Length: 174
Image (cartoon, rainbow, N blue to C red; front, side):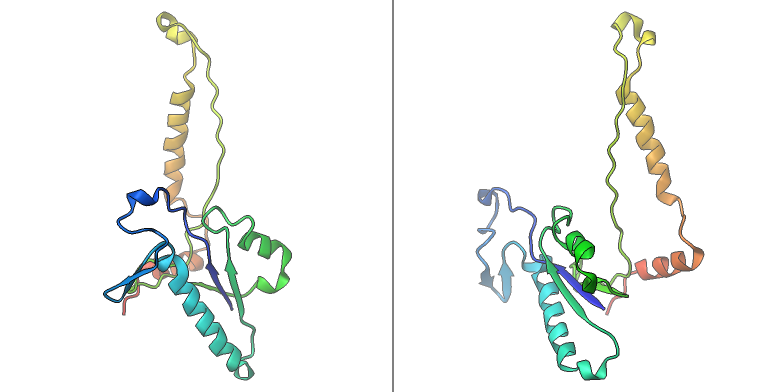
């Protein structure tokens, strides 16, 4: 089992646009305010405490537990978890638990993932009076994006996995 979390935060931007200084850590009415408070320091803390508990009780376990707390998640992970997966054999496991916050009352199974595309569309310029001689690259991209959107419902996952993901996608509330 791999417990995974990230230590970085999305850039705060201009601090003047915040109601409070984004790195203050202000405590008020039992709440902490600042960048990273919910994303993802609570999940990281839960992973660390669980990891320590399991380490104390490792004599009762048959498997291994790994803790990865990485940076670079908010910018794609190339030098964080991706680097670890490529270079450190021990971070691979049968399951991953990531305490990424979404709600205190919600547990989700599965991961949406991501895909990066680079699309190039070329056109041919033409005079406004002879548009039929040209080719509009923007219009071509419009058609591409419409076709891409149609892929959203495409299922290439085996039925059993689709069922588990579908059932796991329903929020479990306490």
